[in-house]
Structure formats: C-alpha cells, structure tokens
Image (spheres, helix red, strand yellow):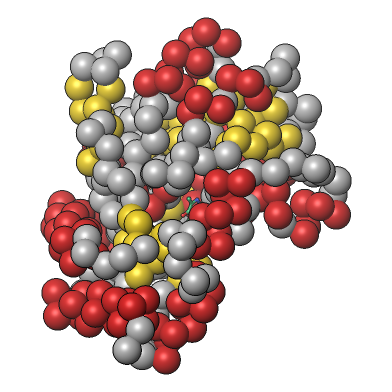
Length: 359
Ligand SMILES: *Cc1c(COP(=O)(O)O)cnc(C)c1O
C-alpha cells in the first residue's frame, strides 16, 4: 500500500533496492540484482559472468527449459549431464567427462529444494578454471554442508552468480520476479547493466551492447519486501510438511522420495515422489487417479534432451539420459503449498496407498 500511495510503481523507487539488500542479506551475498523472472535471472547471470557465443555450459538434463534458454540466447551451448537417481540433482560424477576446451561454466540446479553436492563442483571449477552459476530458483533457505569449507552455506551463496525465482509457487513470491546474487562487484554491475538495456552511466541512450529490459518493478519489490519478513516462517513450514510427508509415505509400497543427504538441509519446495519400477501405475496415470479424488499432483520435468524444440535445432542428437527419462516417467509431485494441513496430507497419503494397493 505504501508503494501504491507513493505513486512509484515502475522500477524506479526504493523497494527494489530494499528487496535486493534484504534478500542478498538473507542468503549471505554482497550483491543482489532484481529482475523480472527467474528465467531472466539465469540469462542475466550467464551474461554477467562473461558467457559469450560458442561457450559451453554444463547443466543437468533434468531441469526447466529456462536453463537451456539462458545459454542459447547468449549463443552458448547447453551440455547435459544425467541426474543422480536418489536426489534427482545433477550427477556430479558425470560432469568431468563433459568438460571440453569450450566449457566456461557449470550450472547446478538445486532440484525441489534439495542442494546439489557442491564440493566436487568446487574442485572441478578450480581445476579447470570454470565458473559456477547456481540455479537456486527452488531452494530459498536451503543449506549445504561443504566439507572443503567446513561449514553450512545457503544455496545461492556458493557460486560466481546465483539465480532465484519469485514466481507465485516459489518459497517467497513477487508474482513474477527473480534475482541474481553474487559476491563479485563486477558480476553484479554487469547484471545490473544487462537488465536495464545496458545504458551507459556516463552517456545515456548510447549503447555498446545488446541487452534487454528485465527490470523488476517497485510494486513487485514491495511485495517481495513484505514476503521477506516471513521467509523464515515459510521455510520452517516447508521443512515441517516435508518431514510429515516422509513419515506418512514411509510405509507405502513402491513409493520412493527424494533422499535428504547428510550434507543437505532441503526446503522441500515441492514434495516429490517416484513410483518404483515394480509399480504398474505410471506417474501420468497416478496424477489422473489423484485428480479424480480432487488431489492436484504435477508431473516432473521432461528432459531437455527430449524437447522437440531442441531436436528441431539439432541439439542433443542421439544423446540419452536414462535416469532423467525414468524420473519423468515415474515421478510426480504432491500438493506442497504453505497452507496445506496435516489432515490434507493424511488424505493425500491414504489416497496414494489405496490406489497403489487396490481396494
Ligand atoms: C521456476 C524456475 C525457474 C524459472 O523461474 P521463472 O521465474 O518462472 O522464470 C528456473 N529454474 C528453476 C529450477 C525453476 O524451478
């Protein structure tokens, strides 16, 4: 209301800076650059770390299309690595064999709020002089225990540039929105320039690079500032719901969930499950059967290598990522909203059990 009353509803206005300061402080980074979406944040981050035409970016095959779009729009090439079947995160042991002379960056994605095992990526990054860009769009508040650094670190504070989304279903929201976080003033400066048409501070309307309007509005940022006041509460609720789901699902045959590794404090952004191969019901069928019972479940990502748009572009030809394909065929996520009650989770779990075990 303060924002509307002030009349400052565009990207000019104090809430953008306040939100950038507040959220970067929460994650622990020096800088935050607010943008209009998580997808825009990924592209902005890649630009900011210096990605250019012909560079290669290593990323998981199991992720949202935004990761590949960000690389492609800068003329870079997404190079895929399959996932670890237990966490559905990038298989960190599969990264090294994909490194080429053109590789410039690795883009780990903290899937469903579970941190990627970063230590092996830190090693590769220093060994091969690669940048790391975290996609933390699903992992606000999640933490990783780094053995090499001997401490817990928040997702979004483990890389050259990290990206968040504030889409409506993310842990905090601005309706639409995103942010690039970094500890490097040059990266932050380049990100700020990229989101704002690369205006020159010294000579306005004079451009030496092709950029975009990816700005976040003051109105959106005001929502973000208000959301930020409750982020600890939201993260705690997510963790509690995740724990409760796990207890309830434990006894149900054929149901496997994301394993929370000792190095991870997951925020369970989405409570995801996989039906094992002995289960005759596919994820798609299960989603339909749950829907009949008025329970909204959602499918997993279709692998990047299986996207028709990329096949048409000649990308990922003949490549296969079996763990990704299996996750897509067998995986679904269950209702995970913050307003979910334990009674509703009981209903979801008993419905699942009835469907799996039959009448
Ligand atoms: C939501 C999401 C994005 C994209 O964010 P938008 O704000 O919807 O553009 C990127 N990466 C991951 C992993 C996401 O979950």
